[in-house]
Amino acid sequence: MGWQRSTLGQKSGEFTAAQLSETLEKLFKGEGKRLEKFAAQHCVANAEATGSKHYNYLFRVGAGRFRMWKQGDPIEYTHASSPTMPEVSRVPPEHKSLYTTGSRFPAELRPVEVAAKPAETKAEKTKHEAGKKPTPVITETGTRQYPTRGLLMAEGLDENVPANLARRTIFDMLFLEMGKIGSRLESQQSENFVINLEPHTGMVATRKNVMLKLPNGTAVSHMTDILIEAENPSRSLYIDIVESYAPPEDVKSHAFDAMHLRKDGKQRYGILVFLRGSHGMLQEQAEAVAYPYDFFFGQDSAHVKDPNKFYALKAQVLAWLGGKVKQDRAGAT
Image 1 (cartoon, rainbow, N blue to C red):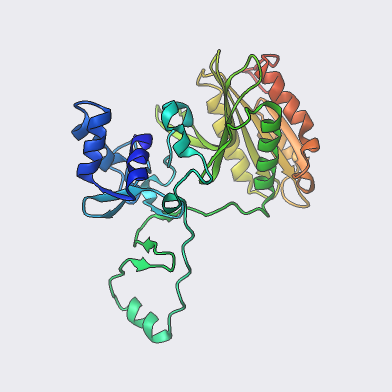
Image 2: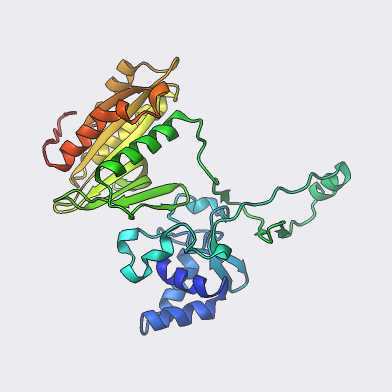
């Protein structure tokens, strides 16, 4: 669904439900109306979720009118963690160019910065708070801001946070080691690339949701910092990054997820990267709590920009990719 609406969005910035249905009908004979209904119920970012599945692909700009969702658009809080773009591996080859960044993406469809609103005077603020119904604001860039109960997608990651820097360093290191040249793509706060390390194939991505089953039969998502999905045989490795000053409950929560992820029988291998700081939890404490992970890696927060400091981590990833690491389901390897 995501790449079909992108095709329509390339031709016209905004489109009606009828135009969406017509485009879907051309692509899927006899399925246009059904898919139009699915899109309206499950694919609109600024509309409440109406079912268990939701995708933030479209943005409603008026009654029966939509456009592509763009970075900076508000998302309804009931499905804030839903994907904003389909998996690249599921996109037909002729449409993959729609998901690259750079000059090939039309300027009018690129993520735009929302201009800051001028400060209100005291009288204007009082009048506004008295109950005046908010209306869309036209910014200096010509972009409309819509009132919403949703969440506003962050425009970028805080580069002062050690965990973000570590994720960037590890991802870049893995790309240089096994990434296919020209395959690196970026969308919102996530990046991915294709593995090109004979005879292995697969994908590597940042900030991905991994579904895990709980004992009561329900399923919840676990946000992992880096996810490596290998093919033939199908298996995955996920890397979580926590900092020493994070609340102990966060480390316990990660360990709880890792414990259930290793029980689902989907050949998942978990690595926890612990960034030591001047205060907070000690590495020994974190390692004791994080026993459900298959591999524990500790590093000083001051060295998160140095890829050489993550050499042992890279060696473990490559060993797993080559099938040289066996998973011990009774405890960490």
